[in-house]
Image 1 (tube, helix red, strand yellow):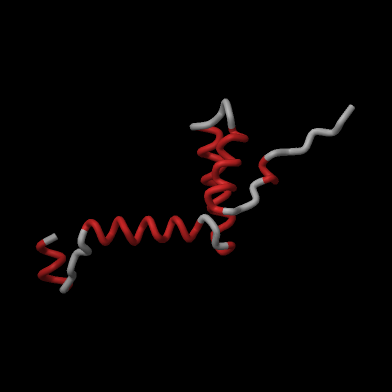
Image 2: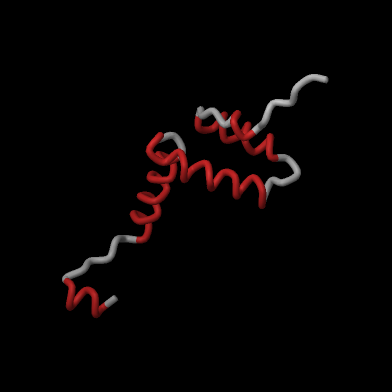
Length: 80
């Protein structure tokens, strides 16, 4: 860091500020349509890897928390 500060006139961001900015961005990305493709890819990975036994629970929780529609992850079953 000292070389970057000296040669590039760089000032590091305070750790707590960097974390806060990151959290704010990811919270925004959950509802901002500009990031829907990336958000959906991450949600699919999480649901498959962490919630394989109960994906619907994960989708419902995210829908409730972020007020988003993830119904396209749950295919409808036709009645026989």
